[in-house]
Image 1: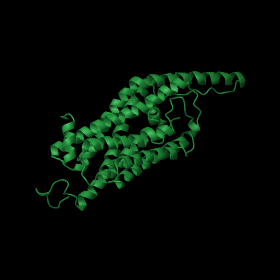
Image 2: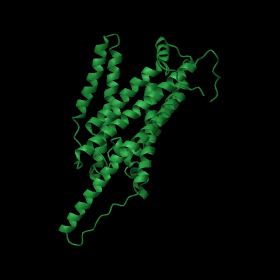
Image 3: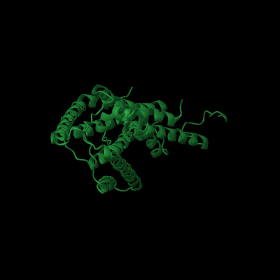
Image 4: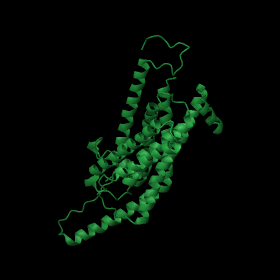
Length: 73
Length: 266
């Protein structure tokens, strides 16, 4: 994180350099991973995430699962 | 912070949170009474079955009592929390798809019509098409032994729905310059073909032992909640996009028209 500071002539869209594109892709990939974990937790988990204590996530999100059409027991 | 990708993600998650909250409150008011009734009916049904079993079987039969982890009141609250989490997560995924689809033109061009078109496609892909193949089932329906199989089918339906909408978008783009009825007809036919493909998947194996009126009410409310989720999401995401475009001074001919046609978002 050093390099030269962006100069005035460059607008945000002009900054499509390799570094910014890589950084943007990393941000997007991280967002996808976090979002998919969250969706798995509320719509797919059957007691695997907090397995020692029972299907807490499943039961807490129970009504939401039914409403959004996610399969439920 | 002026990273356009980060601010786009911010708009997606903010719009998703608002849409999830609105949907959660809507379904708390309208869908929860139906779900509570479905659970009462389920309890009455299982009590009857248990009584019948006791009448037949010898005294050794163990009455299996269903231990509940949460009260119904807590599950009502859980519905709102679930809707907000799902809204934020879907909003983030939507923003990523939006970024990839519009990477060449920038994220702020024609912010409003693009938000509406992409949200309509997202609704059809992840809610309408999978929902038509595997309609939502009220509480009390759903065999614990088939839940893994049903989850695979549901995921497959969502993936096929997304692929169908991506194909429709690609056809629309590649038919650029052709007559609009042809382009839009291709999009419609792709959606219809995707629905037909979904019906090649095996059906839901579970019985649905609930009254038809309750089932209808629940399914209408389920679909209605998802329409509401994506409609609110589209409005907030599009509105935030318009505001960001105005601030950034993005003025393509089309987007300035859209700005003039829409009430100022302040």
